[in-house]
Image (cartoon, rainbow, N blue to C red):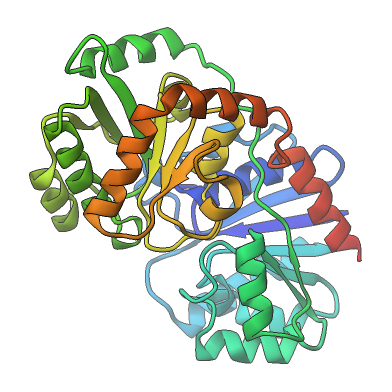
Length: 367
């Protein structure tokens, strides 16, 4: 089977991380091309962040469109997709169907089109455009839609009851130490404000959705109460206006270290992983933490409520206030040993592997 995975870029991000993992896994038994539509010669270090992790058997192509939306760009993308003559065209990103709409209209008899919902269905996937797309193609079984969690899937069926859809939880390739593991362990030790300080880790781009303001404000109160802990934040865009505002509110125990390609090494050296988002689909970082056996502190968003058994392998904050998130942080500190033991026991039975995920995608593609 010839499969075309379509993304905007290969820059740091959960959707991009997943697309690369899925592409590599699908390519073991299929001819797979991953196509980025945004010009990768602009900020290549960022836009090709995951390119080095593509398997040799995967073909990478770039359409090369600039920022913005126009009919010319839609036609250029249509031609690029048409030239691939793929059996399956798999789209990633809530805005991707806008750019691929001509291809969906004209090529759906030759290629099967699928869209993965990478976020909360109520944030970007229930617009007038999507309602048109689903009713025109999804209800007619000409296009398939994939939700990333049971919570998201229920919401999808509530909005689009006749959709050709399925729930396939995200998967992640195995997290193994890199050749920078020892160096990373030493780096993390240098951030500790006390010898017995526990390391809390957050990995995400700076974004209103990720609500890092909540995280740093709660963590500040956390250390003020005498808990020995340091928070490491990995991610892009913290040089933005919002990012600078977040950094200004952060305590000395919060360390912003930019992007890292070896995030797994940091996960393997962390005591707790933190997520403070207002909404999500199925965050790849949560999967990484759960597959390693690291306890999680998170707001009760999609994905988190599917992965975390509250007070078993992690803790869900009751709400999105600073005090509620602070309560969750305190619980994680006081019960870390128990949470860690449970997390390590549960990781070996995890269904969130990329092998399991890719098999379910192939089942859906062949349906």
